[in-house]
Image 1 (cartoon, rainbow, N blue to C red):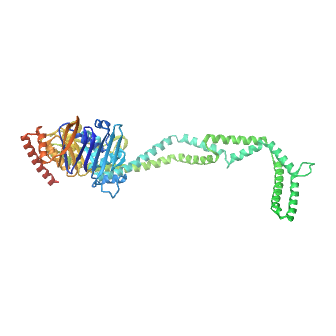
Image 2 (cartoon, one colour):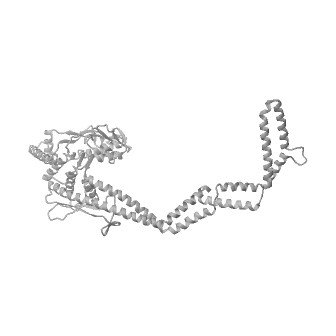
Image 3 (cartoon, one colour):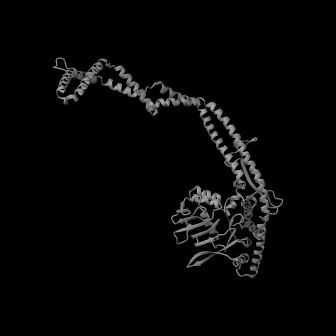
Amino acid sequence: MLNEIQVKNFAIIDDARLNFSKGLNILTGETGAGKTLVIEAINLLMGNRADNSLIRDGETKLLVQGYFDLSKNQLAKKFLMDTGLCGEDESFEEIVLAREVNRQGKNRAYINGIFVQVSTLKELGKLCIDIHGQHDHQYLLESKNHLKIIDKFSKKHILEAKKAYRAALGKYLDLKDRLERLASQQQEKEKKLRDLKFKAEEIEALNIKEDEDLKLENEKRILKNHEKIFELCTDSINKLKGDQGSQGSLVDSMGEIKQNISQLARIDNGFEPYVEDISSISGVLDDLSHYLNSYISDFDYSPQKLDQIQERLYRLDQVKKKYGMELPSLKGYASRLRDEIDEVTDIDSRVDRLKKSLGKIEDMVRDRALKLSGLRKEVSSNIGKAVVAELKDLSFRDCVFKIDQDYDFSEEGIYIGKKKVRLTEEGIDRIEFLVSLNKGQNPRQLKKIASGGEVSRIMLALKSIIGSLDFISTMVFDEIDSGIGGATSLKVGQKLFKISNCYQVICITHLAQIASFADSHYFIEKYIQDGKTKIKVAALDDRQKIKELSRMLSGMEDSSISFKHAEELLSKCEEAKKETVERI
Protein backbone atom coordinates (compact mmCIF):
# COMPACT_ATOMS: atom_id res chain seq x y z
CA MET A 1 0.00 0.00 0.00
CA LEU A 2 0.99 3.65 -0.40
CA ASN A 3 1.83 4.94 3.08
CA GLU A 4 2.97 8.43 2.17
CA ILE A 5 3.55 10.71 -0.80
CA GLN A 6 5.67 13.84 -0.84
CA VAL A 7 5.24 16.37 -3.65
CA LYS A 8 7.60 19.33 -4.14
CA ASN A 9 7.41 22.15 -6.73
CA PHE A 10 4.66 20.42 -8.69
CA ALA A 11 2.34 22.95 -10.39
CA ILE A 12 0.89 24.99 -7.47
CA ILE A 13 2.16 22.53 -4.84
CA ASP A 14 5.30 23.88 -3.16
CA ASP A 15 5.82 21.11 -0.59
CA ALA A 16 3.03 18.78 0.52
CA ARG A 17 2.94 15.45 2.33
CA LEU A 18 -0.02 13.06 2.51
CA ASN A 19 -0.02 10.11 4.88
CA PHE A 20 -2.53 7.55 3.65
CA SER A 21 -4.09 4.80 5.71
CA LYS A 22 -5.55 1.39 5.00
CA GLY A 23 -9.13 1.24 3.75
CA LEU A 24 -10.91 4.08 1.97
CA ASN A 25 -8.99 7.36 1.68
CA ILE A 26 -11.13 10.26 0.41
CA LEU A 27 -9.77 13.55 -0.96
CA THR A 28 -12.16 16.51 -1.17
CA GLY A 29 -11.93 20.26 -1.62
CA GLU A 30 -13.26 23.14 -3.68
CA THR A 31 -13.14 22.88 -7.45
CA GLY A 32 -9.66 23.93 -8.60
CA ALA A 33 -8.09 23.38 -5.20
CA GLY A 34 -5.55 20.93 -6.65
CA LYS A 35 -7.07 17.54 -5.80
CA THR A 36 -6.30 16.07 -9.21
CA LEU A 37 -2.66 17.16 -8.87
CA VAL A 38 -2.28 14.48 -6.21
CA ILE A 39 -3.42 11.83 -8.72
CA GLU A 40 -1.09 13.29 -11.37
CA ALA A 41 1.78 13.07 -8.88
CA ILE A 42 0.95 9.39 -8.26
CA ASN A 43 0.88 8.92 -12.04
CA LEU A 44 4.44 10.28 -12.23
CA LEU A 45 5.52 7.73 -9.62
CA MET A 46 3.98 5.04 -11.81
CA GLY A 47 6.28 6.00 -14.70
CA ASN A 48 3.82 8.07 -16.74
CA ARG A 49 5.07 10.77 -19.10
CA ALA A 50 6.51 13.86 -17.40
CA ASP A 51 6.56 17.43 -18.71
CA ASN A 52 8.76 20.25 -17.42
CA SER A 53 5.75 22.58 -17.71
CA LEU A 54 4.55 20.93 -14.48
CA ILE A 55 7.45 22.50 -12.54
CA ARG A 56 6.29 25.24 -10.19
CA ASP A 57 7.05 28.78 -11.40
CA GLY A 58 10.40 30.02 -10.13
CA GLU A 59 11.74 26.54 -9.37
CA THR A 60 14.29 24.47 -11.29
CA LYS A 61 12.92 20.99 -10.70
CA LEU A 62 10.00 19.02 -9.26
CA LEU A 63 10.18 15.97 -7.03
CA VAL A 64 7.64 13.28 -6.18
CA GLN A 65 8.41 10.54 -3.64
CA GLY A 66 6.18 7.68 -2.57
CA TYR A 67 6.73 5.41 0.43
CA PHE A 68 5.22 1.96 -0.12
CA ASP A 69 4.68 -1.08 2.07
CA LEU A 70 5.00 -3.99 -0.38
CA SER A 71 5.54 -6.72 2.20
CA LYS A 72 2.31 -8.48 1.16
CA ASN A 73 2.62 -7.87 -2.58
CA GLN A 74 4.34 -11.05 -3.80
CA LEU A 75 4.67 -10.02 -7.46
CA ALA A 76 6.17 -6.63 -6.57
CA LYS A 77 8.63 -8.31 -4.19
CA LYS A 78 9.67 -10.81 -6.88
CA PHE A 79 10.16 -7.96 -9.39
CA LEU A 80 12.39 -6.04 -6.97
CA MET A 81 14.48 -9.14 -6.24
CA ASP A 82 14.72 -10.20 -9.90
CA THR A 83 15.97 -6.73 -10.88
CA GLY A 84 18.50 -6.70 -8.03
CA LEU A 85 16.89 -3.67 -6.37
CA CYS A 86 16.17 -5.58 -3.13
CA GLY A 87 17.49 -8.69 -1.43
CA GLU A 88 15.48 -11.60 -0.07
CA ASP A 89 16.31 -10.65 3.51
CA GLU A 90 14.82 -7.13 3.22
CA SER A 91 11.47 -6.33 4.84
CA PHE A 92 9.83 -4.51 1.86
CA GLU A 93 7.85 -2.45 4.40
CA GLU A 94 9.28 0.84 3.13
CA ILE A 95 10.11 0.90 -0.56
CA VAL A 96 10.75 4.44 -1.80
CA LEU A 97 9.87 5.36 -5.37
CA ALA A 98 10.98 8.79 -6.60
CA ARG A 99 10.71 10.86 -9.76
CA GLU A 100 12.58 14.08 -10.53
CA VAL A 101 12.04 16.40 -13.51
CA ASN A 102 14.14 19.49 -14.26
CA ARG A 103 13.76 22.47 -16.57
CA GLN A 104 15.99 20.85 -19.20
CA GLY A 105 13.39 18.09 -19.54
CA LYS A 106 15.63 15.46 -17.95
CA ASN A 107 13.74 12.74 -16.10
CA ARG A 108 15.30 10.78 -13.29
CA ALA A 109 13.69 7.82 -11.56
CA TYR A 110 14.81 6.10 -8.38
CA ILE A 111 13.83 3.00 -6.41
CA ASN A 112 15.23 2.94 -2.89
CA GLY A 113 17.73 5.63 -3.92
CA ILE A 114 19.01 3.58 -6.87
CA PHE A 115 18.83 5.26 -10.28
CA VAL A 116 16.61 3.25 -12.66
CA GLN A 117 15.05 3.64 -16.08
CA VAL A 118 11.55 5.16 -16.11
CA SER A 119 10.39 1.95 -17.79
CA THR A 120 11.51 0.00 -14.69
CA LEU A 121 9.47 2.33 -12.50
CA LYS A 122 6.51 1.79 -14.79
CA GLU A 123 6.80 -2.02 -14.58
CA LEU A 124 6.86 -1.89 -10.78
CA GLY A 125 4.02 0.64 -10.73
CA LYS A 126 1.75 -1.77 -12.62
CA LEU A 127 2.21 -4.26 -9.79
CA CYS A 128 1.43 -1.73 -7.05
CA ILE A 129 -1.30 0.69 -8.11
CA ASP A 130 -4.34 0.59 -10.39
CA ILE A 131 -5.45 4.11 -11.31
CA HIS A 132 -8.95 4.63 -12.66
CA GLY A 133 -9.48 8.01 -14.26
CA GLN A 134 -11.34 9.53 -17.18
CA HIS A 135 -9.18 7.61 -19.70
CA ASP A 136 -10.49 4.34 -18.27
CA HIS A 137 -13.93 5.25 -19.58
CA GLN A 138 -12.45 5.09 -23.06
CA TYR A 139 -10.62 1.87 -22.18
CA LEU A 140 -13.91 0.21 -21.27
CA LEU A 141 -15.65 1.54 -24.39
CA GLU A 142 -13.04 -0.05 -26.68
CA SER A 143 -14.14 -3.63 -27.43
CA LYS A 144 -10.53 -4.72 -28.10
CA ASN A 145 -9.91 -4.39 -24.33
CA HIS A 146 -12.82 -6.58 -23.26
CA LEU A 147 -10.93 -9.83 -23.86
CA LYS A 148 -8.14 -8.61 -21.56
CA ILE A 149 -10.69 -7.85 -18.85
CA ILE A 150 -12.19 -11.35 -19.18
CA ASP A 151 -8.74 -12.94 -18.86
CA LYS A 152 -8.15 -11.07 -15.61
CA PHE A 153 -11.06 -12.87 -13.94
CA SER A 154 -9.53 -16.33 -14.15
CA LYS A 155 -5.85 -15.67 -14.03
CA LYS A 156 -4.47 -19.11 -13.29
CA HIS A 157 -6.51 -21.33 -15.63
CA ILE A 158 -6.61 -18.91 -18.54
CA LEU A 159 -2.95 -17.95 -18.08
CA GLU A 160 -1.88 -21.60 -18.20
CA ALA A 161 -4.10 -22.31 -21.23
CA LYS A 162 -2.83 -19.17 -22.99
CA LYS A 163 0.79 -20.14 -22.28
CA ALA A 164 0.24 -23.61 -23.76
CA TYR A 165 -1.57 -22.13 -26.77
CA ARG A 166 1.20 -19.58 -27.42
CA ALA A 167 3.86 -22.30 -27.26
CA ALA A 168 2.00 -24.30 -29.93
CA LEU A 169 1.33 -21.14 -31.96
CA GLY A 170 5.06 -20.31 -31.95
CA LYS A 171 5.91 -23.75 -33.34
CA TYR A 172 3.09 -23.49 -35.90
CA LEU A 173 4.21 -20.07 -37.16
CA ASP A 174 7.85 -21.19 -37.32
CA LEU A 175 6.96 -24.30 -39.35
CA LYS A 176 4.62 -22.28 -41.56
CA ASP A 177 7.37 -19.77 -42.28
CA ARG A 178 9.85 -22.55 -43.08
CA LEU A 179 7.33 -24.23 -45.38
CA GLU A 180 6.63 -20.97 -47.22
CA ARG A 181 10.34 -20.38 -47.76
CA LEU A 182 10.84 -23.97 -48.91
CA ALA A 183 7.83 -23.75 -51.25
CA SER A 184 9.36 -20.61 -52.76
CA GLN A 185 12.63 -22.48 -53.24
CA GLN A 186 10.70 -25.38 -54.76
CA GLN A 187 9.36 -23.08 -57.48
CA GLU A 188 12.93 -22.04 -58.35
CA LYS A 189 14.29 -25.56 -57.91
CA GLU A 190 15.43 -26.19 -61.54
CA LYS A 191 17.09 -22.81 -61.91
CA LYS A 192 18.91 -23.21 -58.59
CA LEU A 193 19.98 -26.76 -59.43
CA ARG A 194 21.49 -25.61 -62.72
CA ASP A 195 23.39 -22.84 -60.95
CA LEU A 196 24.69 -25.13 -58.18
CA LYS A 197 25.72 -27.87 -60.60
CA PHE A 198 27.54 -25.42 -62.88
CA LYS A 199 29.59 -24.09 -59.96
CA ALA A 200 30.38 -27.53 -58.57
CA GLU A 201 31.34 -28.96 -61.97
CA GLU A 202 33.44 -25.91 -62.83
CA ILE A 203 35.52 -26.33 -59.67
CA GLU A 204 35.65 -30.15 -59.82
CA ALA A 205 36.70 -30.09 -63.51
CA LEU A 206 39.94 -28.36 -62.53
CA ASN A 207 40.92 -31.42 -60.45
CA ILE A 208 42.82 -29.20 -58.05
CA LYS A 209 45.85 -30.80 -56.37
CA GLU A 210 47.21 -29.89 -52.95
CA ASP A 211 49.38 -26.69 -53.12
CA GLU A 212 49.13 -26.91 -56.89
CA ASP A 213 49.35 -23.19 -57.54
CA LEU A 214 52.45 -22.83 -55.33
CA LYS A 215 54.19 -25.71 -57.11
CA LEU A 216 53.28 -24.38 -60.55
CA GLU A 217 54.56 -20.91 -59.66
CA ASN A 218 57.90 -22.48 -58.72
CA GLU A 219 58.06 -24.44 -62.02
CA LYS A 220 57.22 -21.29 -63.97
CA ARG A 221 60.05 -19.39 -62.28
CA ILE A 222 62.50 -22.18 -63.13
CA LEU A 223 61.53 -22.36 -66.81
CA LYS A 224 61.48 -18.59 -67.26
CA ASN A 225 65.01 -18.39 -65.82
CA HIS A 226 66.51 -21.44 -67.62
CA GLU A 227 69.42 -19.51 -69.21
CA LYS A 228 70.50 -17.97 -65.90
CA ILE A 229 70.16 -21.36 -64.19
CA PHE A 230 72.47 -23.00 -66.82
CA GLU A 231 74.99 -20.17 -66.54
CA LEU A 232 75.10 -20.26 -62.70
CA CYS A 233 75.29 -24.06 -62.53
CA THR A 234 78.14 -24.23 -65.12
CA ASP A 235 80.15 -21.53 -63.38
CA SER A 236 79.71 -23.27 -60.01
CA ILE A 237 80.81 -26.66 -61.46
CA ASN A 238 83.92 -25.08 -63.00
CA LYS A 239 84.89 -23.47 -59.73
CA LEU A 240 84.32 -26.70 -57.82
CA LYS A 241 86.11 -29.01 -60.30
CA GLY A 242 88.29 -26.46 -62.08
CA ASP A 243 88.40 -25.26 -65.69
CA GLN A 244 90.20 -27.28 -68.33
CA GLY A 245 93.90 -26.46 -68.14
CA SER A 246 93.67 -24.85 -64.69
CA GLN A 247 96.15 -25.62 -61.90
CA GLY A 248 93.48 -27.33 -59.67
CA SER A 249 89.90 -27.44 -58.46
CA LEU A 250 88.24 -26.28 -55.21
CA VAL A 251 87.31 -29.88 -54.39
CA ASP A 252 90.93 -31.04 -54.86
CA SER A 253 92.23 -28.09 -52.84
CA MET A 254 89.82 -28.90 -49.96
CA GLY A 255 91.12 -32.52 -50.01
CA GLU A 256 94.69 -31.31 -49.63
CA ILE A 257 93.69 -28.87 -46.85
CA LYS A 258 91.93 -31.74 -45.05
CA GLN A 259 95.18 -33.86 -45.13
CA ASN A 260 97.25 -30.92 -43.87
CA ILE A 261 94.92 -30.22 -40.93
CA SER A 262 94.80 -33.92 -40.00
CA GLN A 263 98.63 -34.04 -39.81
CA LEU A 264 98.69 -30.83 -37.77
CA ALA A 265 96.14 -32.26 -35.34
CA ARG A 266 98.40 -35.25 -34.69
CA ILE A 267 101.15 -32.83 -33.76
CA ASP A 268 99.04 -30.18 -31.94
CA ASN A 269 95.70 -31.27 -30.54
CA GLY A 270 94.50 -27.65 -30.84
CA PHE A 271 93.69 -28.44 -34.51
CA GLU A 272 91.48 -31.43 -33.64
CA PRO A 273 88.11 -29.50 -33.63
CA TYR A 274 88.74 -28.41 -37.23
CA VAL A 275 89.36 -31.87 -38.62
CA GLU A 276 85.64 -32.82 -38.47
CA ASP A 277 84.52 -29.40 -39.86
CA ILE A 278 86.94 -29.68 -42.82
CA SER A 279 85.65 -33.22 -43.50
CA SER A 280 82.04 -31.93 -43.53
CA ILE A 281 82.92 -29.06 -45.88
CA SER A 282 84.70 -31.41 -48.23
CA GLY A 283 81.71 -33.77 -48.21
CA VAL A 284 79.24 -30.91 -48.88
CA LEU A 285 81.35 -29.58 -51.77
CA ASP A 286 81.62 -33.04 -53.26
CA ASP A 287 77.85 -33.66 -52.93
CA LEU A 288 77.12 -30.22 -54.40
CA SER A 289 79.37 -30.93 -57.36
CA HIS A 290 77.57 -34.19 -58.11
CA TYR A 291 74.11 -32.53 -57.68
CA LEU A 292 74.98 -29.66 -60.05
CA ASN A 293 76.24 -32.07 -62.69
CA SER A 294 73.14 -34.22 -62.36
CA TYR A 295 70.81 -31.17 -62.31
CA ILE A 296 72.27 -29.62 -65.44
CA SER A 297 72.28 -32.88 -67.33
CA ASP A 298 68.65 -33.62 -66.42
CA PHE A 299 67.45 -30.02 -66.96
CA ASP A 300 64.85 -29.99 -69.71
CA TYR A 301 63.69 -26.62 -70.96
CA SER A 302 60.50 -26.71 -73.04
CA PRO A 303 58.67 -23.55 -74.22
CA GLN A 304 55.53 -25.67 -74.62
CA LYS A 305 55.67 -26.80 -71.00
CA LEU A 306 56.04 -23.16 -69.84
CA ASP A 307 52.96 -22.22 -71.87
CA GLN A 308 50.99 -25.08 -70.33
CA ILE A 309 51.96 -24.04 -66.80
CA GLN A 310 51.05 -20.40 -67.44
CA GLU A 311 47.70 -21.45 -68.93
CA ARG A 312 46.96 -23.67 -65.91
CA LEU A 313 47.86 -20.89 -63.46
CA TYR A 314 45.66 -18.46 -65.38
CA ARG A 315 42.64 -20.82 -65.11
CA LEU A 316 43.22 -21.39 -61.40
CA ASP A 317 43.59 -17.64 -60.80
CA GLN A 318 40.35 -16.89 -62.66
CA VAL A 319 38.39 -19.37 -60.50
CA LYS A 320 39.96 -18.00 -57.30
CA LYS A 321 38.91 -14.46 -58.26
CA LYS A 322 35.43 -15.58 -59.32
CA TYR A 323 34.61 -17.27 -56.01
CA GLY A 324 36.76 -15.04 -53.82
CA MET A 325 38.71 -17.83 -52.16
CA GLU A 326 42.05 -19.69 -52.28
CA LEU A 327 42.47 -23.21 -53.70
CA PRO A 328 42.11 -25.13 -50.38
CA SER A 329 38.83 -23.31 -49.68
CA LEU A 330 37.59 -23.96 -53.23
CA LYS A 331 37.82 -27.72 -52.73
CA GLY A 332 35.72 -27.45 -49.54
CA TYR A 333 33.26 -25.15 -51.29
CA ALA A 334 32.73 -27.70 -54.06
CA SER A 335 31.87 -30.30 -51.39
CA ARG A 336 29.33 -27.96 -49.80
CA LEU A 337 27.80 -27.27 -53.18
CA ARG A 338 27.25 -31.02 -53.63
CA ASP A 339 25.51 -31.16 -50.22
CA GLU A 340 23.27 -28.28 -51.26
CA ILE A 341 22.51 -30.00 -54.57
CA ASP A 342 21.36 -33.04 -52.59
CA GLU A 343 19.15 -30.82 -50.40
CA VAL A 344 17.55 -29.05 -53.36
CA THR A 345 17.09 -32.38 -55.14
CA ASP A 346 15.32 -33.61 -51.98
CA ILE A 347 13.18 -30.46 -51.63
CA ASP A 348 9.95 -32.14 -52.74
CA SER A 349 10.13 -34.78 -50.03
CA ARG A 350 11.13 -32.12 -47.47
CA VAL A 351 8.07 -30.06 -48.39
CA ASP A 352 5.89 -33.15 -47.96
CA ARG A 353 7.42 -33.88 -44.54
CA LEU A 354 6.96 -30.28 -43.40
CA LYS A 355 3.33 -30.29 -44.56
CA LYS A 356 2.65 -33.37 -42.44
CA SER A 357 4.38 -31.80 -39.42
CA LEU A 358 2.49 -28.56 -39.94
CA GLY A 359 -0.80 -30.47 -40.04
CA LYS A 360 -0.05 -32.08 -36.68
CA ILE A 361 0.97 -28.75 -35.10
CA GLU A 362 -2.13 -27.10 -36.58
CA ASP A 363 -4.28 -29.70 -34.86
CA MET A 364 -2.49 -28.96 -31.59
CA VAL A 365 -2.98 -25.19 -32.02
CA ARG A 366 -6.66 -25.73 -32.82
CA ASP A 367 -7.18 -27.93 -29.74
CA ARG A 368 -5.42 -25.49 -27.43
CA ALA A 369 -7.17 -22.47 -28.94
CA LEU A 370 -10.56 -24.15 -28.45
CA LYS A 371 -9.66 -25.02 -24.86
CA LEU A 372 -8.72 -21.39 -24.18
CA SER A 373 -11.92 -20.22 -25.85
CA GLY A 374 -13.96 -22.69 -23.77
CA LEU A 375 -12.42 -21.43 -20.53
CA ARG A 376 -13.31 -17.89 -21.52
CA LYS A 377 -16.92 -18.92 -22.12
CA GLU A 378 -17.10 -20.43 -18.64
CA VAL A 379 -15.59 -17.31 -17.11
CA SER A 380 -17.84 -15.04 -19.19
CA SER A 381 -20.93 -16.78 -17.86
CA ASN A 382 -19.81 -16.26 -14.27
CA ILE A 383 -18.76 -12.68 -14.92
CA GLY A 384 -22.07 -11.81 -16.55
CA LYS A 385 -23.98 -12.89 -13.47
CA ALA A 386 -21.57 -11.19 -11.07
CA VAL A 387 -21.59 -7.90 -13.02
CA VAL A 388 -25.41 -7.84 -13.13
CA ALA A 389 -25.49 -8.34 -9.34
CA GLU A 390 -23.01 -5.51 -8.83
CA LEU A 391 -24.86 -3.22 -11.27
CA LYS A 392 -28.13 -3.81 -9.45
CA ASP A 393 -26.37 -2.71 -6.26
CA LEU A 394 -25.47 0.45 -8.16
CA SER A 395 -29.14 1.23 -8.99
CA PHE A 396 -29.36 -0.48 -12.40
CA ARG A 397 -32.42 -2.54 -11.43
CA ASP A 398 -33.39 -3.73 -14.92
CA CYS A 399 -29.94 -4.12 -16.42
CA VAL A 400 -28.76 -6.87 -18.73
CA PHE A 401 -25.05 -7.47 -19.15
CA LYS A 402 -24.09 -9.80 -21.97
CA ILE A 403 -20.64 -10.92 -23.07
CA ASP A 404 -20.71 -11.59 -26.79
CA GLN A 405 -18.02 -14.11 -27.69
CA ASP A 406 -17.35 -15.38 -31.20
CA TYR A 407 -14.42 -16.48 -33.31
CA ASP A 408 -12.34 -13.89 -35.14
CA PHE A 409 -13.07 -15.09 -38.67
CA SER A 410 -10.46 -14.45 -41.37
CA GLU A 411 -9.35 -16.03 -44.63
CA GLU A 412 -5.77 -16.01 -43.36
CA GLY A 413 -6.39 -18.31 -40.40
CA ILE A 414 -7.05 -22.02 -39.83
CA TYR A 415 -10.29 -23.95 -40.14
CA ILE A 416 -12.49 -24.21 -37.08
CA GLY A 417 -15.43 -26.18 -38.40
CA LYS A 418 -16.19 -24.95 -41.91
CA LYS A 419 -14.77 -21.43 -41.52
CA LYS A 420 -11.29 -20.01 -41.18
CA VAL A 421 -10.41 -18.24 -37.94
CA ARG A 422 -7.57 -15.79 -37.34
CA LEU A 423 -4.79 -16.89 -34.96
CA THR A 424 -3.40 -14.17 -32.68
CA GLU A 425 -1.26 -14.12 -29.54
CA GLU A 426 -4.49 -13.83 -27.54
CA GLY A 427 -6.22 -16.79 -29.18
CA ILE A 428 -9.09 -17.05 -31.65
CA ASP A 429 -11.78 -15.08 -29.80
CA ARG A 430 -13.45 -11.76 -30.38
CA ILE A 431 -15.16 -10.58 -27.19
CA GLU A 432 -17.40 -7.58 -26.65
CA PHE A 433 -19.47 -6.38 -23.70
CA LEU A 434 -23.10 -5.60 -24.51
CA VAL A 435 -25.40 -3.89 -22.04
CA SER A 436 -29.01 -2.87 -21.60
CA LEU A 437 -29.66 -0.50 -18.71
CA ASN A 438 -33.39 -0.13 -19.23
CA LYS A 439 -36.19 -2.66 -19.29
CA GLY A 440 -37.27 -3.76 -22.78
CA GLN A 441 -34.05 -2.53 -24.40
CA ASN A 442 -31.89 -4.98 -26.33
CA PRO A 443 -28.25 -5.21 -25.21
CA ARG A 444 -25.98 -3.04 -27.34
CA GLN A 445 -22.39 -1.83 -27.44
CA LEU A 446 -21.35 0.21 -24.41
CA LYS A 447 -20.29 3.20 -26.48
CA LYS A 448 -23.72 3.36 -28.09
CA ILE A 449 -25.78 3.19 -24.93
CA ALA A 450 -23.89 4.33 -21.81
CA SER A 451 -23.30 7.87 -20.53
CA GLY A 452 -20.15 8.92 -18.66
CA GLY A 453 -21.74 8.27 -15.26
CA GLU A 454 -23.05 4.90 -16.38
CA VAL A 455 -19.65 3.87 -17.71
CA SER A 456 -18.12 4.86 -14.35
CA ARG A 457 -20.51 2.58 -12.50
CA ILE A 458 -19.97 -0.31 -14.93
CA MET A 459 -16.19 0.06 -14.47
CA LEU A 460 -16.70 0.17 -10.69
CA ALA A 461 -18.77 -3.02 -10.88
CA LEU A 462 -15.98 -4.74 -12.83
CA LYS A 463 -13.29 -3.52 -10.45
CA SER A 464 -15.41 -4.61 -7.52
CA ILE A 465 -15.28 -8.16 -8.88
CA ILE A 466 -11.65 -7.99 -10.01
CA GLY A 467 -10.71 -6.67 -6.57
CA SER A 468 -10.66 -10.09 -4.94
CA LEU A 469 -8.64 -11.56 -7.83
CA ASP A 470 -6.09 -8.85 -8.59
CA PHE A 471 -2.55 -8.64 -7.22
CA ILE A 472 -2.26 -4.86 -6.85
CA SER A 473 -2.06 -3.17 -3.44
CA THR A 474 -3.74 0.18 -4.10
CA MET A 475 -6.64 1.33 -6.26
CA VAL A 476 -7.01 5.00 -7.16
CA PHE A 477 -10.29 6.49 -8.42
CA ASP A 478 -10.51 9.91 -10.02
CA GLU A 479 -13.87 11.21 -11.32
CA ILE A 480 -15.70 8.02 -10.33
CA ASP A 481 -18.63 10.25 -9.37
CA SER A 482 -18.94 11.74 -12.86
CA GLY A 483 -22.60 12.04 -13.89
CA ILE A 484 -24.15 10.55 -10.73
CA GLY A 485 -25.85 11.83 -7.59
CA GLY A 486 -28.45 11.13 -4.92
CA ALA A 487 -29.13 7.53 -3.93
CA THR A 488 -26.81 6.23 -6.69
CA SER A 489 -23.87 8.06 -5.17
CA LEU A 490 -24.54 6.30 -1.84
CA LYS A 491 -24.39 2.97 -3.67
CA VAL A 492 -21.10 4.00 -5.32
CA GLY A 493 -19.67 5.01 -1.93
CA GLN A 494 -20.70 1.68 -0.43
CA LYS A 495 -19.12 -0.16 -3.35
CA LEU A 496 -15.86 1.76 -2.90
CA PHE A 497 -15.91 0.88 0.79
CA LYS A 498 -16.42 -2.78 -0.11
CA ILE A 499 -13.37 -2.71 -2.42
CA SER A 500 -11.35 -0.98 0.32
CA ASN A 501 -11.75 -4.08 2.49
CA CYS A 502 -9.54 -5.92 -0.01
CA TYR A 503 -7.28 -3.05 -1.06
CA GLN A 504 -6.23 0.40 -0.09
CA VAL A 505 -8.47 2.82 -2.01
CA ILE A 506 -7.68 6.48 -2.74
CA CYS A 507 -10.58 8.44 -4.21
CA ILE A 508 -11.23 12.04 -5.21
CA THR A 509 -14.89 12.99 -5.03
CA HIS A 510 -17.22 16.01 -5.09
CA LEU A 511 -20.09 14.10 -3.50
CA ALA A 512 -20.75 14.01 0.22
CA GLN A 513 -22.55 10.68 -0.14
CA ILE A 514 -19.31 9.05 -1.28
CA ALA A 515 -17.04 11.00 1.08
CA SER A 516 -19.12 9.91 4.08
CA PHE A 517 -17.83 6.32 3.65
CA ALA A 518 -14.22 7.41 4.21
CA ASP A 519 -11.97 5.70 6.71
CA SER A 520 -9.59 8.66 6.29
CA HIS A 521 -10.75 12.01 4.92
CA TYR A 522 -8.35 14.64 3.57
CA PHE A 523 -9.27 18.23 2.74
CA ILE A 524 -7.25 19.99 0.05
CA GLU A 525 -7.30 23.78 0.13
CA LYS A 526 -5.75 26.44 -2.09
CA TYR A 527 -4.43 29.67 -0.56
CA ILE A 528 -2.24 32.70 -1.35
CA GLN A 529 1.02 33.39 0.48
CA ASP A 530 3.57 36.07 -0.45
CA GLY A 531 1.81 36.54 -3.76
CA LYS A 532 2.07 32.85 -4.67
CA THR A 533 -0.66 30.23 -4.87
CA LYS A 534 -0.10 27.22 -2.65
CA ILE A 535 -2.11 24.25 -1.41
CA LYS A 536 -2.28 22.50 1.91
CA VAL A 537 -3.65 19.09 2.80
CA ALA A 538 -5.29 18.42 6.15
CA ALA A 539 -6.44 15.09 7.61
CA LEU A 540 -9.90 15.71 9.07
CA ASP A 541 -11.05 14.59 12.50
CA ASP A 542 -14.68 13.58 13.10
CA ARG A 543 -15.89 17.17 13.71
CA GLN A 544 -14.02 18.56 10.70
CA LYS A 545 -15.33 15.72 8.56
CA ILE A 546 -18.95 16.62 9.38
CA LYS A 547 -18.19 20.27 8.60
CA GLU A 548 -16.72 19.31 5.20
CA LEU A 549 -19.67 17.02 4.39
CA SER A 550 -21.99 19.94 5.29
CA ARG A 551 -20.12 22.19 2.83
CA MET A 552 -20.31 19.54 0.12
CA LEU A 553 -24.05 19.11 0.63
CA SER A 554 -25.08 22.78 0.68
CA GLY A 555 -22.11 24.73 -0.62
CA MET A 556 -22.14 26.70 2.65
CA GLU A 557 -19.67 26.20 5.49
CA ASP A 558 -21.88 27.30 8.41
CA SER A 559 -25.36 26.00 7.57
CA SER A 560 -26.93 24.40 10.65
CA ILE A 561 -29.44 22.52 8.49
CA SER A 562 -26.79 21.01 6.21
CA PHE A 563 -24.70 20.28 9.33
CA LYS A 564 -27.54 18.12 10.66
CA HIS A 565 -27.92 16.51 7.25
CA ALA A 566 -24.21 15.73 7.28
CA GLU A 567 -24.48 14.10 10.71
CA GLU A 568 -27.48 12.07 9.54
CA LEU A 569 -25.68 11.05 6.34
CA LEU A 570 -22.57 10.01 8.25
CA SER A 571 -24.65 7.96 10.69
CA LYS A 572 -26.48 6.23 7.84
CA CYS A 573 -23.20 5.45 6.09
CA GLU A 574 -21.70 3.99 9.26
CA GLU A 575 -24.61 1.55 9.40
CA ALA A 576 -24.12 0.70 5.72
CA LYS A 577 -20.42 0.09 6.36
CA LYS A 578 -21.21 -2.34 9.19
CA GLU A 579 -23.65 -4.23 6.95
CA THR A 580 -21.05 -4.40 4.18
CA VAL A 581 -18.38 -5.78 6.53
CA GLU A 582 -20.82 -8.40 7.85
CA ARG A 583 -21.65 -9.55 4.28
CA ILE A 584 -17.95 -9.81 3.40
